[in-house]
Amino acid sequence: MTRPIRSGRILIIKHGAFGDLMQAEGVLHDIRQHFPHAHLALLTTPGFVGLMQRCPHIDEVLVDTRAPLWHLPRQWDLYRRLRAVRWDTVIDLQNSTRTSVYRRSMLRHAHWIGRLRGPAPVTGLRGQQYLLQEAGIDASHAMQPNLSWMAANVESLLTQHGITRPYVALLPGSSARHPEKRWPHYAELAAALQREGHACVSILGPDEKDLAAGFACSILQGLDWFTLAGVLQQAALVVGNDSGPSHVASCLGRPGLALFGASTSPLRSELARGRFETLQVDALESLPVSQVMDKLRPKLPVLA
Image 1: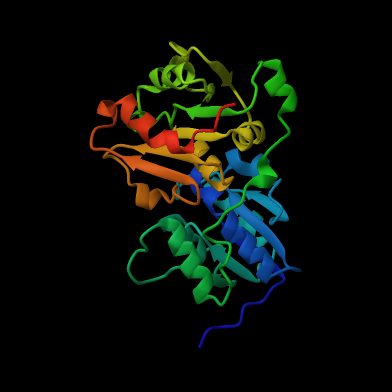
Image 2: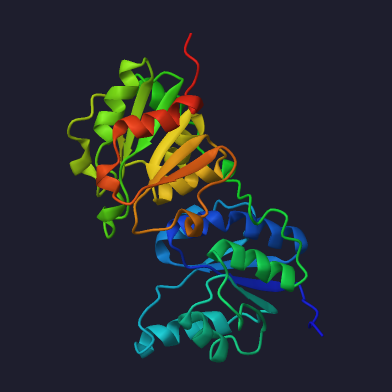
């Protein structure tokens, strides 16, 4: 028999990565709807605190530096902070070796909702959906995250850079740890789009400045998360790699296309939803611009 879930104070654990956290927005929405009067706290890594403090489904954001488990002083600090509050329920969306240690040590008195056994789900997001359903929580938003709350007003930024709508947003980067996810022909794609009359905006992250060379279109660099979401929300079409910004575009409901090589799985990424699609090839560097253009043309805005 399933133990009844109490409301009160609920701790949700979701460390990251960025795209995974963004995709969990719908799961957080479902948890909030199920516990409308509970105090919901999110335990996540330091880099996501400012972002998740704006999430409308969360009341409080707590920091976990994910220090090595053998680093006793930092583990003691986390233990002390978590034990200072009596958590009625813990919802483990991370499902990691680390969180299983937390369950046995720091949070052993709380009612715990997490995946403990059984085969691994097809995707992490599907696993979170099943987790809610098994706990008796309606999961109607789990597969449809909505990041509209994240998008800042970017009218002045677009005006400052002379960017007029409609425009195609290009996301040529990826995590610096995974350069193999980068399709190397975005500058050529921008040129091809502009030859057909479509304005382009290339958005580069702080570790992607080397990708700016060769772009004959507007380039935006160093955007914070909220400005990034605002620029993507205003785009007529988004093209990117398997990256966090592509997840943002997908979760904003934008039309788009994410390009995949053999190193990662479009299925497991859960990037495809609504009007946002994926394209996978064996060798990403060999994917021709012409093939990408053929995929994009039905999605491109109709020009006057």
